[in-house]
Image (cartoon, each protein chain N blue to C red):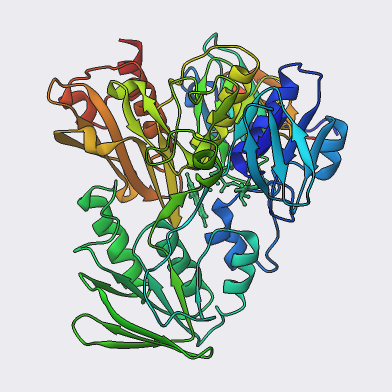
Length: 405
Length: 104
Ligand SMILES: Cc1cc2nc3c(=O)[nH]c(=O)nc-3n(C[C@H](O)[C@H](O)[C@H](O)COP(=O)(O)OP(=O)(O)OC[C@H]3O[C@@H](n4cnc5c(N)ncnc54)[C@H](O)[C@@H]3O)c2cc1C
Ligand code: FES
């Protein structure tokens, strides 16, 4: 069993293969120098904590104990599907019976001239360390892109006392996947914390002299910053798969078993697109931590011939200041919205399809105020339930009771 | 060692639910199972120190509100990613309608 990509998905898959009792060789190849680690803290606690540290998914010791060979700092450079081998950047080659591609995604590059060493992206622990070094009090940080990673980083930078400007080309932040009502709460929280948000603004020019970044917006405004962090989305890592002739469709295309057209090659996590059963097989690619975990585990089962179809409901969270947002399902599947208010200003928006089916739920509130109801909503979505809108809208009606119905 | 502390009234917790109990600088989670038994564990998730009392109880599982890590609250066993460290559990008894837990 060979896994390419030692991130959330690859790391979980390697452990799962052993948990399932497989006792042949398991090899995990990753180009980062670390054991697999969690990325979500990189824009959150790892930024604001005293000393940034890696939150490892598995230590070297655990891998040794589970007889998992982790080859780090080495890239897989080619796959020979006929010979069943993977070529590595150190010149060696690995034979496989089953292969999992868990190559993840990388930040979308800003296609503009003028970028230099003070224009950076955030994906890895080393990226995080480099950014952290510039986030001291009094420093000016420009964040290009009002998506999750940019906004979480904005919150962390404010906590450290940096002056923060967020630039978003769309008319509002979090255009993708987040209802306007919730994006508005987040927008206001950032403004209350002193972040300047410029929406509807493209970039006219960037000049980075290695010390300072001078940004000109399309309306002519100028922003000077000590650091510009670019967070304009992510693109799946698919080159290896494409070069070996596997289909790419917004990610490495797999079926509901996470299998490519080659029965011995699987793909999972941020790098793959797959049919989502709860939405009638709509093909999606998710960039979400729990999905990477679940798909890693599912791929492991199917590499061991379980033939199990993907059935999970997408789930995502984000933390900014004291607020947590959680979303279950894909809200763009909904036609109407029912709002449920909870304590402490927290609320949940339930997204219903035309036929009344609950297809998604988006919640925001302080701490974990929305967690329980979002989790129950997720179970209702999985059951394809059509709960009465009045019940969803009333805090007095326990969602758990709807689940039993 | 054998300190029994009163945590709450038995009726304060719904069936198949959990509440938070803070005592002497520590925090605990007290559970009432679907078959009406009471249990207690450390209050914070072993993944990122989040209060489990905001989580969801299903049968004998408590699910962490933050990233859905799961534990068996009767035994403290971690039940799958991202949690791998077990929860500490504490003995519980009911006395005159009060829930008492023994904190070591
Ligand atoms: C800053 C940040 C914050 C986030 N916050 C959240 C959050 O709050 N909530 C949430 O749900 N999700 C969040 N995510 C998303 C989540 O971390 C990802 O969905 C998850 O990491 C995907 O896991 P993966 O294993 O598919 O990919 P990755 O974690 O990207 O791992 C892929 C690995 O494969 C390696 N690799 C690629 N190609 C090769 C090759 N040819 N040879 C060897 N190795 C290779 C890469 O270097 C990488 O180490 C966040 C992501 C980031 C970057
Ligand atoms: S804090 Fe409990 S699962 Fe992460």
